[in-house]
Length: 298
Length: 245
Image (cartoon, rainbow over the protein chains, first blue to last red):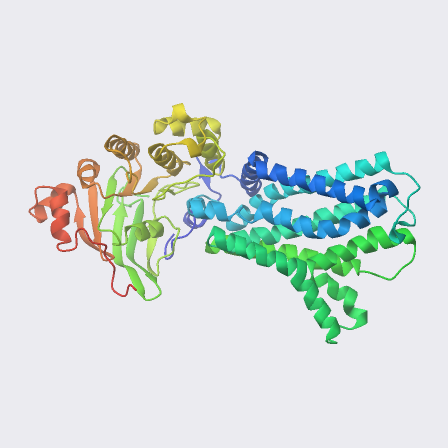
């Protein structure tokens, strides 16, 4: 701690220069520390009724959309088409709800300050919080989609094809692709929400930042792409790659490309899958990096 | 560590926020087995000094050196307003912190017993009284058996009986061989329990010694009188250091 007072971890490593022993036992490793934080987050998620309500509401909305849109009776791909737009709106809302106070609450209670006297690094806090919340979020997103998928299996029949987009080959595998991509999208938005939580200094500002992030994710990035296209900044050929810059566009394009268009056999290319996946990965990584920086600076 | 090496030593610590110098040239030590009380008017810089000593904030200049034994957690810390994540019991909360240093639930129960909270082990933290929350905070501050325990106003807002209990817990920690540094405005309890007192005013140390030494130097019948003479004309007001907005 000489020169500058550091965290408990700094102190331990600087003083000893050797593996730290505590009461004859080795200091817990990264897996143990992150696992401890993950378990705490899982308990928090399990004990927070609003998360359960969010999952139930999402299930009801998706079932309703699937039923009213006719997708449930028409098959898996028609259901995926029906659900795509609601998912674009609702998944970010649910993900932000899971994450926007995750770090902020600990910061406001002073628990982050206390954690600085423990051998816990900022990135370990972020990793633990993220993984714990992610497990809850995946359940909250996966369960409604599984219920809807199960409903398709029960009520699907070959007649009553209402929309043109409902034509073509159908397969639960294509629906499963949409589900996987939706979960990936949710995890990216959760990372954004955790970053917001880590850099916000008050609940009100966290909520405001969350709203801004939602607007940017849902509208701003897409509008920027439209502007870029209309202003000639983006060429027609580069559009499908530029879509990867927006998490929402990347998600939408991936679902259309891998779960919908493919069912018809032919059609215009709606996304560059590799670019879109890379775009989502960069949003995820950048957000978690910002979160770790925010916790360090908190 | 030698017999003369302090567990914690601050040397010429400065801490500024922009143009505001909150701490100026503060040097102090905390030795094993002693209770060091940090006293001073509101705004004197006590909490800032505590945050620097615990490593939560870095000094602008100077250094803080830990000279105790190798351990996972050299310095334990009780914040001025301890709070815990709601929805968890006292035992779960302490077990969480304990797990971060490799302790198990048995150790967490022992930690609760140390501060007299074993009967409230299964009570949710949001259902704890202010005093019980502070005791849980002290138990948290001792997680990992840190050689140095820093308590920021552990008796603040507590009834007299609970305040006495909190100071007794601090003294017991020192009896176990730890160095305890605490800040407090309860000068009667400080005089009764502290081995050494550090009076800070305007970001500087203006008095240091045993309660008897300080009262003797100030020719005061009590630590409270000595305090009032040391900060003459300022008692009862909030102190702002030079440059404060």
